[in-house]
Amino acid sequence: MLTDRLRSWIADAPPLPAFVYDLDALAAHARRIRDAVPIEVYYAAKANPDAPILRTLAPFVDGFEVASGGELRHVLDAVPFARLAFGGPGKTDSELDLRADRVHVESPRELARLAAKRRETDVLVRVNLAAAAADRAGVALAMSGPFGMDPDLIEECHDILASAPWLRLRGVHAHLSSGLDVPDLLAQSREILDWARPWAEKAGIENPEFNLGGGMAVDYSSPTRTFDWETYGREIARLALPGETLRIEPGRAVTVYCGWYVTEVLDLKPSHGRWYAILKGGTMHLRTPVTKQHDQPFTIVPNSARPVRDIEVTLVGQLCTPKDVFAREVPVTEIGIGDIVAFSMSGAYAWNISHQNFLMHPPPTFHYLTP
Ligand SMILES: *Cc1c(COP(=O)(O)O)cnc(C)c1O
Image (cartoon, rainbow, N blue to C red; front, side, top):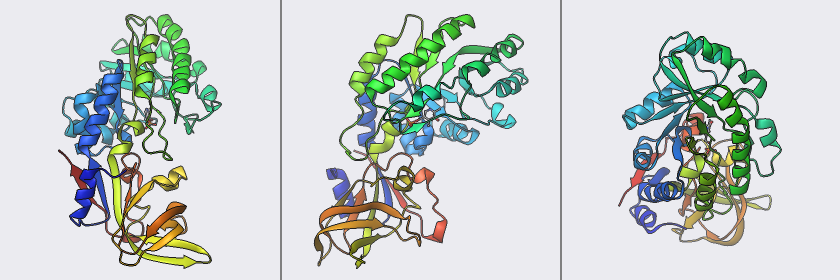
């Protein structure tokens, strides 16, 4: 599982814990997505907005989806001239002053506040069809609740748009759930289009744009099984009608595989019949296994003179809370103090969602592997 490049990086005894991003692998993965998917692809920056990652992705994506004024400014700093779609609930007045190629409008009230700016702006209205999505098997996260507008509520947009000709309605945006495999995602896309096409026609949009959201499945229990971009790309292309622009905005499935959290075993002990390995750092750096309630996949690089063999071990961090767990009771052939542990699939919703200051341990270091 460890790439040769990561192995030789570890052999140089780097300062740990560290986040390591394999930018070469990221570029290859992004190229695969680009080649497979013939519709527009935006990267959802909130999955991992690290600047070298954004710059690596830029040649392979049509733009970036940002979900706050902070992300918007940050992405433009990292990738000047990038096309941006600006979404997210609860945009403030000063955020609505920021320029984006597309603003994803989340409520009639937000549309009215944008209209009051009297500035030429291209908008997509975000529809919430999440009740249907929540029932779908396999959904990891249904975006029901305050995201977008119910079909009833979105009707209020027509009058606001009619009185604000400087707002150009370009189409419809929907991001209904995440964690969907190809068949479910395609079924969801069809549902969105079935709703959005008549709505766009009634609103008089020529050449409408339909942003179908992100949410492509990522399986943390099998790090080598990736989303089937080739089948997805082939099928989604068949859904597009002439004159339409279809767009997706994946996050997790783009960057998750390029990141590693690498650390070392500080202590190893049995406690009431269970083995615990205490690792330098913790879930204040890599919060993903806590939020997703999963075992983070890992590889051990042996470095110990006296390892313990054939045990089930729980990998924990340095925090004084029983919730600081990376992986629970995982069988290992050997593990010892001083071993290096490399957690894979740490490239999305990992460092950037973590609470690094809890307990005031030193932050991780950051490294980028390039050819
Ligand atoms: C988070 C988010 C995405 C990306 O979702 P992933 O599950 O990371 O692919 C896309 N669009 C919107 C509106 C989002 O909030």
